[in-house]
Length: 357
Image (tube, rainbow, N blue to C red; front, top):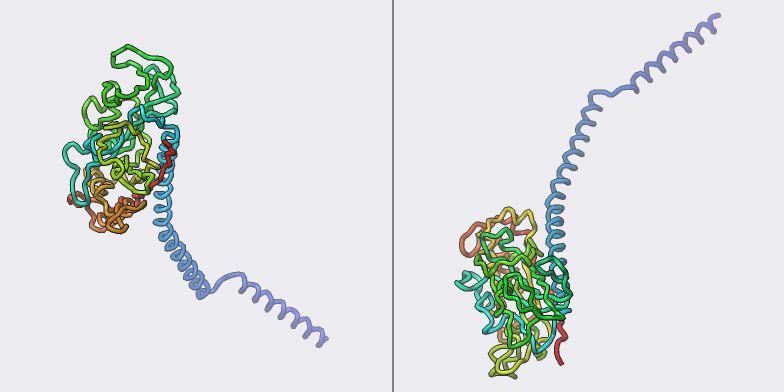
């Protein structure tokens, strides 16, 4: 009996001990809870810091994607238009040269404002075998194509890149002189500037001559547009012919019609800002910032004797941009929010014309 009682008692005692042990493992002590909360708090802080560090990177990446997309759209469209340009010596081209227009091509450098008669950015107009539209809405297989950065402060597309694709008659002629008249391609000595209905292709500002419904905004973020020429002799210049071989030439048609005979390629440079950055920069500041980006003639060349190489213009733009961002203002002392300006990117592309023999 004694042994049985002792064994039963031991068994009951052991069972109670086991229950007590299991009860303890079912909860947490105060020390365990404090350790758990501390670890959880540390993990939350680390995750928050990681997200805070990732947010600026994501914003920068998004800005880059926005500007990359705009630049690709613009440069691809220019590539199509130039590839199908009418490359002849008996048609007119409205392009930068010493006598064509007193626009940005006449030059200004960093720190100098756009002067009276200057447009701030380049523009050009030419005939191309791409679809355009008549005033009636019908499509034409050939067009007068023009590019410009809108210089009218009262326009909704102010400081945005616009493209004109004006449909032309290509298999007939019109004697109509009304404002809605459809004109054929003109051959020299007729010029683009001589036809009133095409005035917006060669003007840019707040006058009626600069207004045309055929213009559409192709690059809402493109606020600066510049181009220059690569000649067949290997030189880069803002004059569309070889001045050494043609010392008496004053235009594409005087004293002889040369067209773009000496031009191997046209290089285009654009400055693009993302939509969020543009919304934060006042138009006056954006205009001054565009003025700080020197034109080809006055940009410093990095070659021997200051000779220009492809990429020199773009490098000078980048230097000017970084200078303005660091100062928080343009050279004209207009405010420039640094974070907004950091979304600006510079792009360029060279288009081989393969024009004339």
